[in-house]
Image (tube, rainbow, N blue to C red):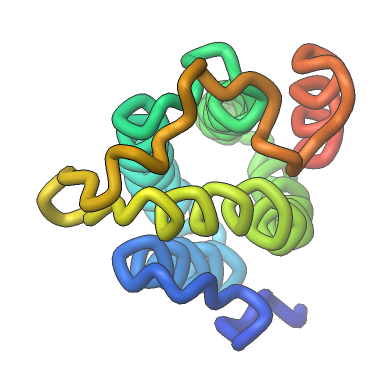
Length: 170
């Protein structure tokens, strides 16, 4: 089975975000390479990483005036919930669910990175946000109001976008 490889198409020129995405790719590769005996452990490591990864991006959005209800954050919640549900099904012996989810996550990650994360990275650079320290170097560039939607990364209804995210990994 071919699996997602780290490539320039995933690089957003925000080192901490890029490193986190590269770790996701490596953990997803481990899931794809896992035999039945190690699949659930590899999946659990991916879910744990994803939980931290999404929480990190969500903190960055909040620190730079993305609303907590934006579709980017909502998509994180939906995808993570679906991943956890996959782990529950695998625990009942349905390992095929994780293998299918891994294939779908590879597709989803590329789309999510190139749209929602690219918009976030652009926004973070525009306001001079330092992901390591959490400081904003150009506070005058912060938006006056909370950003709803995904800062141009999606134009539809938030719930519709979240539903599409869930469909992508189901």
